[in-house]
Image (cartoon, rainbow, N blue to C red; front, side, top):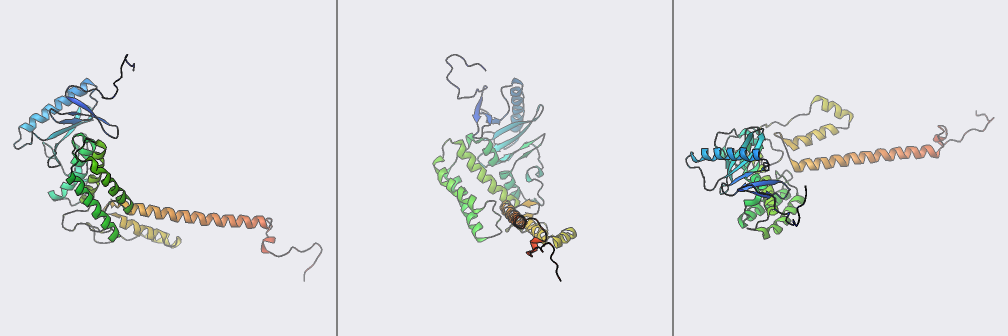
Length: 339
């Protein structure tokens, strides 16, 4: 790419019509149409891509205008290419922090097939915490929407206060409970509280990095509420509490037989894993602690084995490798007889 004479402006990427370029803190380039409030991360440098996205956006906006009570003045549209000449979409209502579509959508696509999700108040947390997409529909939630497209997100004092209260509650929960459902340990929560103090300067300021930090934290807490059935009958209050199965799993005959040969270590590990992997959901904090203990056990075992081998080799070198001298008895002189 040649540099033109006297060219000294390299800061702003090229825009295309009403599409203004935006650069994500992670480096992703996306575009925002402030006139029709449309986001896309498509490659608009290609004319065919621009035409396809404009055509899809026009069709969706026309369908939306025909729907009664559609929030046309405040909603935003997100488009993304999912296959050749096929695009996924979703609408965002920023004031309510919700997403919606123009057709019926199965809830399994955003709940990761979590069992017994039956209440709209329960699905609300999945809408706020997770995203997934297939070849036909792109499904994202508002917090993740703000994480990927942070340019229009406004950090307010109320948002930071709400997030700080959630972190403080998580700290207290981790202190008082050994089976907390909070997805962070004490060290991580302390770092989060330190970040909260530093984020207060970003209130109502156009700092995309700060916006992404807040969106990430809110997403993690919302998803934890969803998988633990927050606000539902029989909500999970302890990490080892099963909602679907009341009977504790038993070790198989193979594990029990193997434990006889390995000093019951397999059974002990299996019981720990049963408390970590509950209802097909892994507790992140307990998993990290389990892996740390496992690494310590293997390190101690390797150290013990190394010391035993070293002692054996040192003893072999001291006695000169003669099996008879290893007993510590003197060798008989030549020609001498015993008895």
